[in-house]
Length: 471
Image (cartoon, rainbow, N blue to C red):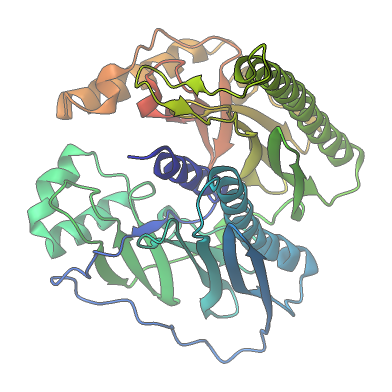
């Protein structure tokens, strides 16, 4: 695999993380064919309910020597609650901007010596809506070096009464979903049992009616023989919007793009629209974090590139002034290698945003060469009623031994997964217990413990997370 193709996969991972608040993505490669045993296939467009909700079409293009890009997407135009409208539209815009800017950054950096521009597009459209909910599909596609396109479908599902995302667990229980999939695809029953099937993590969905969803399981989810997505219609589902709390405030997607010879920076960060003292302080803290990444990244990039430039000048010029080439690593050929710009990206995810709790994460990704980059997460959870930052101990009753409780939950998860599959990623975890300052966030009334890359597992395992039920 070439470095450029490897980098494409890395940036695809960044895009997945930037859209983590929506339904999981369905990745479609050119050779994929719809599963012949699936009861339904995805229609090009789902019928829209006859309600007075309108959409604005946004269309933009980029025409650069290294990238031909087109985007066409819809945003809600007339929802009565402007706070919810802003929040929903900005959630969609965040995903579009992330794909566009990450693709632009990657192609600009990696296109040296390549005469064929990359081609990319983003197309977004509401596929179903009524008075209380909306499903939205964003299709992003890219191809480099004239190769086959790589496509990702991202589904968003929104509660239009509260502004909250609708997750799979909101419409069907884990056990019922497992039964549905097992009965329709009996060949995967053992795989479902083995994987301790988690509906919220292993599939996409979108509404086709208030009481029906289309559930999509990505290819290769169960095994390497599953070379196509599994698609199943599930009716008689039940969604109760009264169980959702109103969003605390609209979140706008802020972006900062800085392009210099030695570095490329793309910051995607939340701007909380509420002007209260607490939200103003949160916005200031985010700004300080961005400035810290910029100061560190720009200083390192400038220093390294100046050093590389000085060494190159010294190595490439003989005492008589003749230009020579620095030899390559052991192959006897001259090298024209030039240190490429470093990448520094910041992206975010909102995990809880209601009238009581705000919990979100900022991810700092940097790529300075080599096989892969490195991402580090920072997390913030606030009690909006008490107007204070939430500590881990605040989530449990006084004198409760929450450290032991959390450790037991993590050990049980690792042991369970390793027992089912000795070759799973969990088998390589080196977990020795948490400390008081462990990273965490709050999602769906669960505590989620987060570990950075390399903290308890090898790089290939990513950033391990453990969902801990709050007692």
